[in-house]
Figure: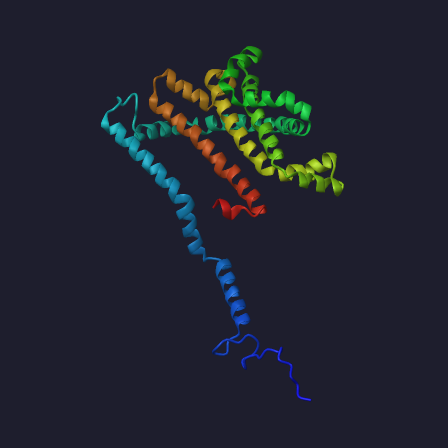
Length: 312
């Protein structure tokens, strides 16, 4: 009996799914996909990568600084303000060079940076457990949460007179101002990060036995790390601003000579180049801490979560 099966499809002579010209569609698509993946993931050469980094990270801030200096010089040359009120960039640079030759610049910067770093570390030690307590215990959050938000919005300079009365013209008064300015930011940052943790993570951790302190260490804190890092950055900003306010108002020779005292000395002597030089040093420290500490830490956190390309 003749075979009459008509359901079997005929295949081209070139093989399964062959296209005209003898190429296979499956292999062509696979080869095309592999080629595109290789092209996308192929590492750029060292010179190209360095050039791209210079164009994207170095050139924009350099161009911005050059633009600011140009505008500053033009305003100075226009004579809008007298030279003793608004000196030009060259006069400010001369003031910085003079302070460098006097041998005071590094000591002044180190005094302020060491105070700010120590106060910030203590603020982390106090604000982190406080944030955990506020974020995890609802009655505590109801009672203390609004107070932390109010303290965060309170200008740090408001604490200087009270700290001087409480502790006198000592380093303790300066550290008290720094802590009162930074602790609320650190605690609120951790609370905000914990609020953004999906409840499913916490329930899954409990199912796996991560409860209590173990759950906080292995589930809650890692999941809340981006928000906590944002709180740390804001806490450092508050620490640095609080320190400058305290040094500016509560400075004395016995306490050491910091950037705030340099700023105040320039004001008392009506030395505007020195005032602007101190402002530039304060700004440089803030930018340096951001670029050397927080920016690499933020890139590491984003890279571990696969979010680095999104922020580039």
